[in-house]
Image (tube, rainbow, N blue to C red; front, side):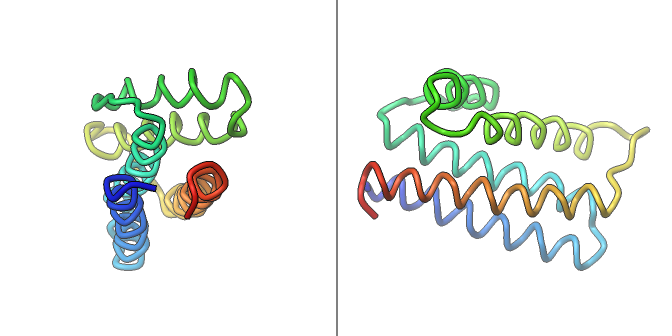
Length: 129
């Protein structure tokens, strides 16, 4: 595993901790948004390990689907989790009429942890740990 991949994973781990802290402090929309970024960094780690260089959020999402979920290299549920987390982040960050509530943020944090864990397992199995 390269240093760049490790740095993305470190950012993912840090972001999920921050998401939890934000939720505990009552900043529910910010927590939901931060969960997405934790998943985004883990996805970037996976793509970087494969030599796939994309930066736009939509491109990262598409690449995870195309290179990993569709051929069955990772469970397709992780691609769905990433897509859903992005939608929640967009609501949290941009939609002033819709509110993200605590149960949604808690679920997203758990999904974020599961997503990061699955990416780490895949990377360890395929690129050493």
